[in-house]
Image (cartoon, rainbow over all chains, first blue to last red; front, side, top):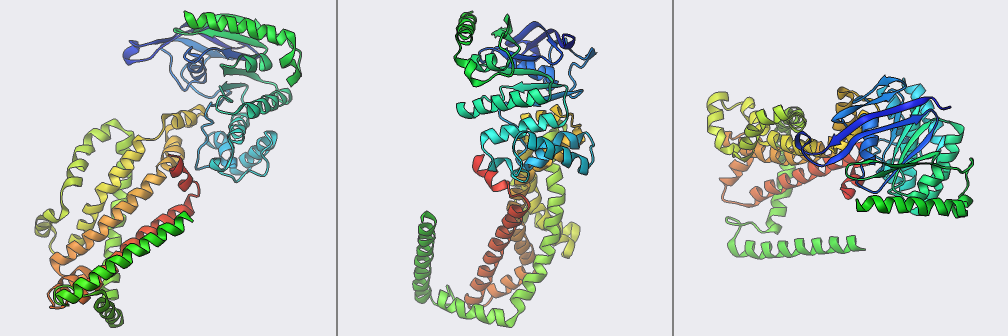
Length: 257
Length: 253
């Protein structure tokens, strides 16, 4: 259970020409365990999304390494990484089925097999019956379910989620959090989940990495004590509220730095 | 309801225009300006006579060749220019120069090189349409969201897959718009080229212009307008059928 799945080693990133601009991350290091649900929590601009994109390999870092399953994967994508994006990023010209099958299609999986597998994951996220709908015909919550199915369909060993519910209303967000926990229960895998919502972090995570901005670094790491499976009721327990207040203090302190 | 009202206003506008035209036509006489009532009669005669539609079909066939070539060259050219900095640097000065050049001004030169045959007319149609198609595609290709490319990369798509599975579909609305703009220019160029060498539909317009009656001439222009509008509409419908997501995209964009 505690073997290392992913390591971020001394990653630095600056924006602007030739790295002359704003420092987003400076010598950032982090270790993520096998099958852990890790949440990166921080205010906007703390570099948490950039870090996740560097881990996924779609953004380059200036220095440092990303090590996945003991292999250096810096600057490359794939290798068991599946990503879910904040604004869904579905392809508008593809139906639900073809969007979910996208990763399999580019991996060269045959039509019959990828259709079958896409249907299976569409069912898993509760979208059966919407296989032939285009993204514009779906609500935001449904679109993100497609995004999650697309990421899961390639059977990733590590799931990267970049504020996946940030663009949704509160009710949909709560619903999708529970769905995610259900799915995670059925298909255990390592998850790195980025959010700026303390409540979301506490509800989902095994471990919360609280980040502070400019440059992004680790403020503190919190082990979340709640038993699984978790239900909505824990959000009003004194322990939950105490932790929430505690983390809020950290974030507020970070914001003034 | 809103739509119905707009159609009502459009009809009102047309009716007002026709009335003014009728009045002016009656005052000036058919040698200077045939009134709509006269044009309508002449128009039926043109249809019965058959020459108008025969020449039109002849001209449109040749125009289609030039237009198809313009699409075949303009679309890939625009796409490559929009996605590659080197191609942009090489081709854009030429495209920008040609797009502002009047093709009519090139005709004397082209006649010297190509003669007055089919090659000339196809070349003129091609040159009038290709730059608009290329530039529209170019703008579309430049505007493709980097995040869409990143999403494809996240799923380990290689650059060939990214081109065919992301760039081309994302370009689709621009290809369609480019084709529609290009087609309008192609039809105009067709008539212009034919009036220079007096052949086909343009030749027919030229000959009608020499008569002392303006009725048939105006009739020919009406047909040309109808054909342009029809083709434009046709391309849009084809686009809609092929890509049901397209209209929605445009509304959101």
